Image 1 (cartoon, rainbow, N blue to C red):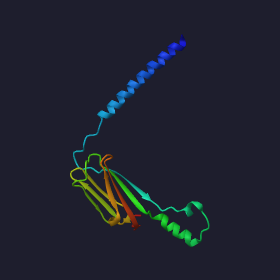
Image 2: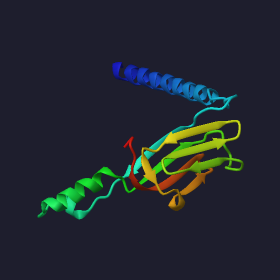
Image 3: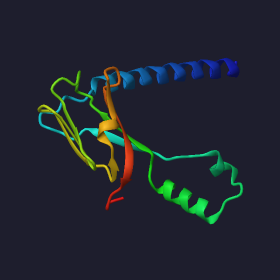
Image 4: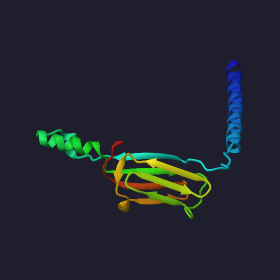
Length: 151
């Protein structure tokens, strides 16, 4: 008889826990953030891509000149990717993206403003940008061409 009572008690606890979990999910859906009333800085992420070769993993024969070149290349990324989260933007119509050698400026009328120091010199003419409507993110890929004083 004790075993049946434990099974019933566990079933009751499981039911209560699932009901509590459902209530938490409902509350999270209701707690959706409201659109900001002023201009805000969007969340963003910068990822640097560094060159890798099989020689780096293999650690075969190297001269001091080869090591010097490898160390020099390792300091400068090949490219950088800036991903901007634009939760309240439906399209890029009216948006302004201005990239020069060391800075990135993004403006979305009356909603977002972002001014970034990229810390490296980039080739803005050979970069690209893409807006993903489903994720509501703007992804900007830029080739890095050199160091700045901030690097």
